[in-house]
Image (cartoon, rainbow, N blue to C red):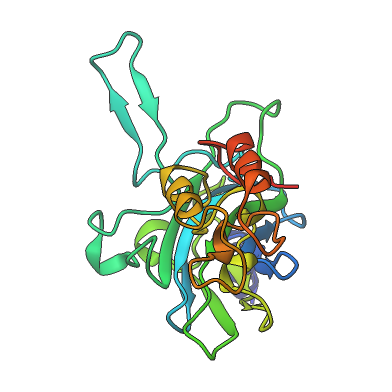
Length: 264
């Protein structure tokens, strides 16, 4: 009997530790911004890395990403080091994994309805350790083909990058249970699709997440045109006044070659 009891004790102490991490998403107001967040507040160990697949259920596309979490700034799939510079320059790349990196285990990426995200932390000591919860990043998505006014997404772990759970803890031997909750994005039916782009009021006419030449071209093509003129482009009507004019140019100029949001 003593041998059996001893064996049970050994099994108990040898059992691997488990961690619970929650991954959620939420639309920001009625815009095209979706925030992906995590919560590991109940855990002693910190999250070291995420490998997640974000898949929309229709032809809505991921236009860009933004508002990246500064704690998880290492993007292993796209990081590059220029050794011709002194000291070497590090380009941390983007959290959207490149399809060609692992084609069989990577979603197509920006411009498609699915992206694979790869984000990791790098720190020494407790002074700059990552937080145990917060927003990882924002996705900016296009509206699906009319008459559909809603697109929904699912979040799953990318096995090739972060194991079956999609999350790696500070202790790599710790097993992780991930509770990932998808969400839906609703687009208003009574306004132009592009007015749902969170950066449109700041000059982002195409929802790319930045203000650049393409937005200036859109503004120029609709210069001094007003609704219902067929040449009027509501996407270039940054103040949504019903006409494209100096006020819209002022907005575009204020955010010229900047990333949006933030956009008041």
